Amino acid sequence: MRKTIMKYLPALAGIIFTAGWFLWIDGHVYENTNNKNADFDGPHIQWIYYLPGIFATLGMVMANIVDLSALNSNSLLFDGGATKVRVWLFISFAISFGCIGAALWIMVAVFLPPHNTNDAAQWPGIAITLQTSLIFLSSLLLVFKKVRQDDEYDQF
Image (cartoon, rainbow, N blue to C red; front, side, top):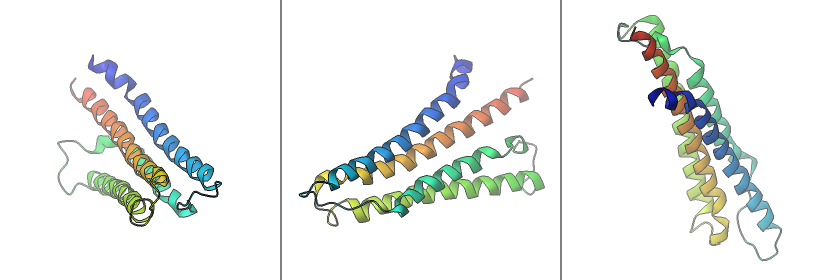
């Protein structure tokens, strides 16, 4: 059972990643469609609102590009390779958390009341927050898969 779950974990991470970007694109299309109506009074999506998703994707790539075999129980705290991997992972997760914070900031400052009084115009703010959260979740799933894969080899 565990091997089956671990086998399909990257596919699940890809589905979650795709769902995150799909939700943001849906929020943007929703905003563009509704802003064409004359009676719709909502915020417009600017190019800067794409940055949390782009940088969250960068953080995901950064977290999954390193070789996690340097992180083992035999490495000391100040071992050269292990320290570099730990710093790299810290920076990648800091970027991801910063993107979630930026998405929350955009949602609260632009798309929620009192700045936006139109209830129908809140979906893009919710979508950008869901997007960055889902990208971070997919990153965690991929890192978990890599860690578990390395642990299976250590058992023999």
